[in-house]
Length: 114
Length: 113
Image (cartoon, rainbow over all chains, first blue to last red; front, side, top):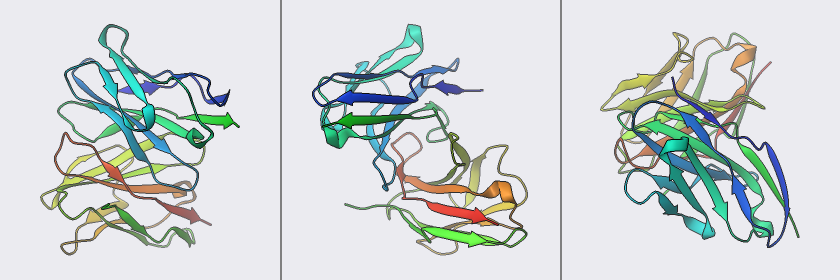
């Protein structure tokens, strides 16, 4: 069975600080990897995804993530956060042959102080 | 921009009652999903639906749950006899293909009292 771990449950940063949110998964096969964001009162929105190819993936709003297969990791990064990045961030993994039957991590609640 | 819409946004029901949660997926999408998130816990996969039948379901999706696409636009989740532990946020999602991104709705918060 798949599992996804997000190590940071709560992160507080000041504006312009750099962000890295950890995501590790366990699964023996080929995976599709996702980061979703949920702004307060809104639905889950896709930030970025990795299916294959370049392991460094660029998403919306200046976010990027790097798939390191040997570490089973897909960490999310942003060089300089803004107050508007305050949200909950979810890492999700799907087995390549199971599409959007996703396993989610527990989420990381990010607060950016102005 | 097309989006997945869910109704109602909040449903309160008494234990033992049946509830139907409704979703309108994005119109050209072929795959439909239900997820739930119990307060303070992870988002969990319930079921996927394609070509008018269930393609995958989790252990959570037991006999009290059912899904249906009653017409060309709606996708519903029925819980036959609700229990207190069914209280959660239920998310509907849809995707064009199996291995393309899923778009999520805003969720229905179900409270069973």
